[in-house]
Image (cartoon, rainbow, N blue to C red; front, side, top):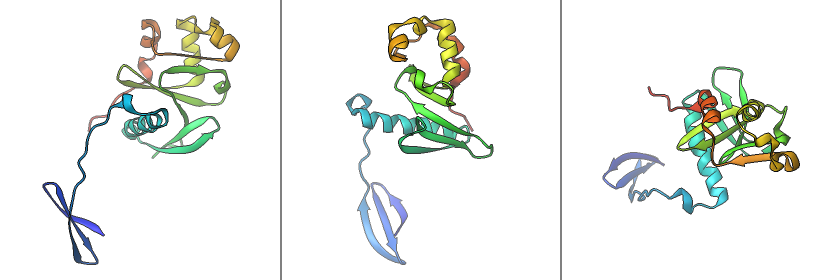
Length: 165
């Protein structure tokens, strides 16, 4: 069956050359991110980031489990490049990602950032005291909803922008 015509809020479906009639189009409504549960938020963020990475020539594949610590893979259409990406809801470093070539993607104030974990850890060490915190020293992880101006400035090169055609 294929859609052959859209008129107002109705769609004409054709199967084997025979009209199957008009079907009302579903009403599309925006959702509130804050109303989503944790799993839905991760899927929402994956879709947003995958769309943005498509502008840079990447095709993204969501993984069912954290394969090699990645939530998804992003491979470039013309380069021999595949990124293992861990999707976070905020800036995050974790000792378990060290030396694994994991890329961390996180939103901050309406923008997305993408940076290799070890590079992020180096910038965090240079511009914050997070690596001296109990969270990092004991648990091997640190995350924050806020980013100080010096660290944010150093992350400017890792900020993703929508590519305009």
